[in-house]
Image (cartoon, rainbow, N blue to C red; front, side, top):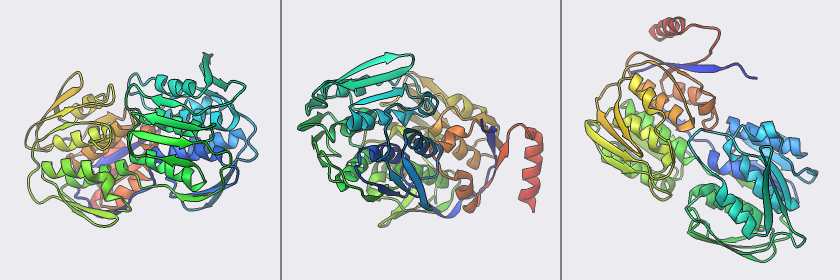
Length: 441
């Protein structure tokens, strides 16, 4: 078991400079399992160095794949030697996206055994729509001793029509994984449209799959028996980009956010401009700066192309620094406001009623000891700590490291005063004194 770590931040520094965005977490956690469907080796580029990737690669190795590090952010994955269709229990339960191994293994073997997924505790996020898709394709599912066991009948997976009861990213991607080698045509209706769904389809198509309509609400997949190897670069992470954009704005900074697809950031840019943030767009970068007061706004999170739920905690931290009363309505995830109590420790004035949060902008936050309760909540606390006066200590940062590659290094390069510390070794007062001395040098 790894020693717990924490971030210690001395706030009040203006972020300036350039930051390079890593590959998209939400795309790579599906693309890595998708290599199980390839009949030849694949090379995956722009792979972010995050713990969810580490777990995914470990699962591939445990299944029997040959995973070779080829250089920075690049891996060669050869799954031809994989014989097992069972994902080890302890590995799968450590991340939510382990459920993508269900669709990939089912598509390859017609059988899979995967534990119920772990990941961030964001309320009830059932996998019933995943199971519905697998059943429509001709599979039989059962749950025993915490493991989901899915198998096909004698005819294997068969193309079919799948209509989701709600827009669901995970089930859409799992349905694509399972259907890509199924017999005949599969039509997925009420599909999610996120960029990482398009990226998964593009990766599979680069191997010879026949997938049309990804990025729309109707996706058509004609099953293909053989998928060749490919070299493929994962798209940039829109949520990581949005997080650094908000961090720049919260500190009154001027930051060039590089290696992005501006079109993927349209809803984030639109909201930030309403708040009073200046954003310049380039071919593969955006510059974020603030030259006036931040102002209130109202936001509702929606499935893509709406404002993403994964950016809601970060934008809430920014609105704590704005003038006036803002309102955020959560339209996607349950229990997304768990981070509010931690922001209140820092002086935030936020009231929550169900899926609605009302934020009274105070224009000021104060450093405090806090804990990350999930990935994006952790990012929001990082932003708050950067903008706050005094010292902020953030514990349970393993949540943050699930989705952000070298966050402390990237922030430090922008001028932040931040360190990662081992929790048992130093008392909070010692951390505060030490980082204050280093800041004075």
